[in-house]
Image (cartoon, rainbow, N blue to C red; front, side, top):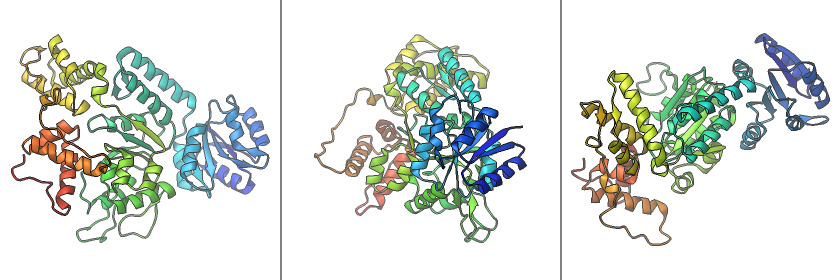
Length: 458
């Protein structure tokens, strides 16, 4: 049985929360001041503290200045409203989550169901760090480079909190793997992790897919449909390619992040959203705002804790480790052991990897299939864009002051023309996914004058 301490200056509210907590199988104590809180903490160390920062004899923040007081206790802030400042404050103080007054029963129940002492999380992180030292693996991530070690530090810092995370990086760098690692290290790990690619869902269907719809909400809605927010209840929702989400839907997502509620399409009844949101984009977020692809207020709300993933060309010391990891998984799955020869490893180390880790995995898979013997040489390491290593061809001249959106458009179309309208080679040369290239070309074809899609493209 867990023990909770409610630090709240309103005695009636504190007693109400104590009763709710007791109904969930916890013992509960209350304190209406800092002095009372310190006395209760001395009497019995709680598993969780619900802490109001506005107290009659000072700020609840003072307790965070006494490390031994809350060293092994999960802290949840009680606040009058959810805001970006609240999220940042919770992160800075090391709080696991926050509750909005008046306290919502379902939100409180969700927090209580995830109570986990900080010492448990610290022990798990210590095990992960030991595993990293041994093998180069951190959770679901692989790599020993200094750039990846910085990512591991950020993941370890943010996973125990409830704040939103924005992951940036080129296509194929592993943004979804980072999001899943954060989920696996969080208090929400026992609940679903759902990944949604906002660029892969039709604009006409994306609202229904994310928020769900009621029966009869539109033509063809012959039954009620639960969206991703409902299906991810208690867990984590990963919104990939967030800049591909229609702007009108970004407004509704912002409302969910600010209020913790949403409505199914065709409904007038609010639903509780007990979900942690992690978003990702392969664009530079600030440029996406300038280009009208991302609302500035949504960026601020998502970017509470930014994590940037380096491209594989900037961590070439990890290539061999990643390749061996992918090969090991394939051998285990296929039941036939193979290994890389030194020439193969050297060839992989010197390649630029415009498709990043995703391309590396595909190259390893292809080499495994093509090599009949136990030793994989460099013969079957066929790269999609060898010209990227030693660029040859025309140059693109850009006038200083040209808008970034125009530069991107010109570069994409010029590269497409250079590769004879071959989209796969164009995407690889530019270091973006094929789907991203298709999205850009679709945008350009809808502009006055068109010109995005070309006849005879492959």
